[in-house]
Image (cartoon, rainbow, N blue to C red; front, side, top):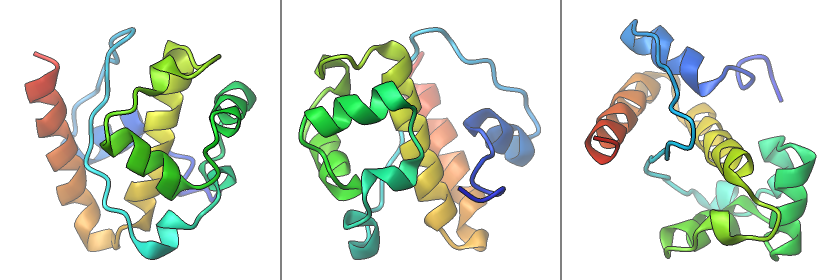
Length: 125
């Protein structure tokens, strides 16, 4: 993972909006995932997940980012995957977001983050 990709979700939001974000424990995180064919075929290893999150996804049969994104889009709750607790779920969603964010051209990133902030503000209120 490059230095650019190692930024956390909170750092990216703070950098773009100028506001410090405090994460709620157990809070859900929502975002739109724009899946390209290249991203679809990318192995899960590209997400740089922790061991527990990675192993739970592999055991559940997910091998690529595309498979995981499609399952989530179809309504699969990753929290229901064996050994995938709240922290692992949050980590998976954040890493998917960061992967998506870093795949976007530089000029589209700010708009994408603002879209995510609005989506989460409406869902978490």
